[in-house]
Image 1 (spheres, rainbow, N blue to C red):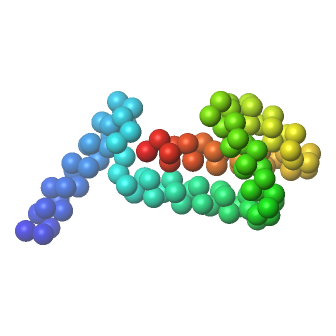
Image 2 (tube, one colour):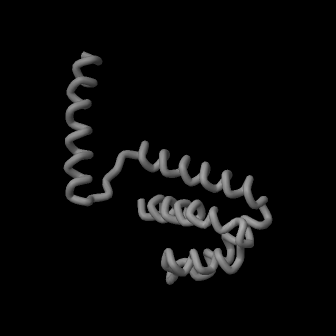
Image 3 (spheres, helix red, strand yellow):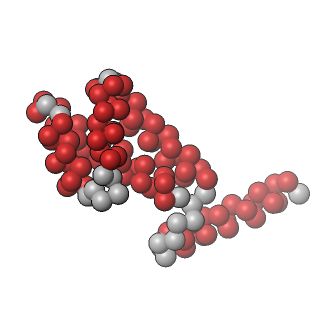
Amino acid sequence: PGSDSEEEAKPIKPEKKDSAESRGIRKQPSADINSLAIQVEVFRSHLEQLFGTDMLCSLYGALSADNEESSTEGREALLKQLLPPDKHKHIGTFEKLFQLEDQLWIR
């Protein structure tokens, strides 16, 4: 009986997930939320290693202050002002972190 219920559940889950994704509906299993949370933490800790906790908090504060109105271009422009030129290569990492966090908040 235990293996039968597992076999019945397996084909159903991918079908639901595929159809939900194809319709653009955000009904993802909690595993996806956990995965997003892990990705956010990985990006955040990577940036923390690069910039240090204090600098990262300052940058985060500046970016979050107007985050609701802020576009990708706006955040990139702000980071270019705040970061020294040798750190501009990390702007994409910040943007990826913000995108992941946005996805996490949406869910």
